[in-house]
Length: 83
Image (tube, helix red, strand yellow):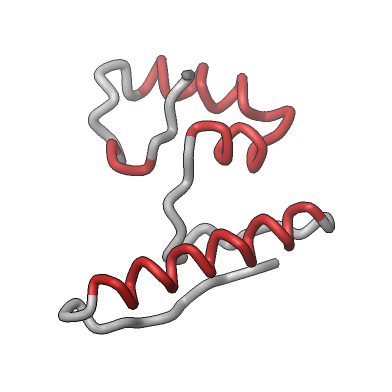
């Protein structure tokens, strides 16, 4: 299980970008070696990342979102979509 809980000064956007890029590299390495991410971290997740994370349960999640969140108003910034 991997959690990326780091901080950077909001006054230094370059440092923030550098840390997020490093987080992506660490995440990609960990998942390539069978690791899982604890998803409370500083790592933007793409729809492809979410599909990989949920694996065979992805269709079940999409069905639940369609039933319980048909207008996609819950957690819209997380990128959990069917695309």
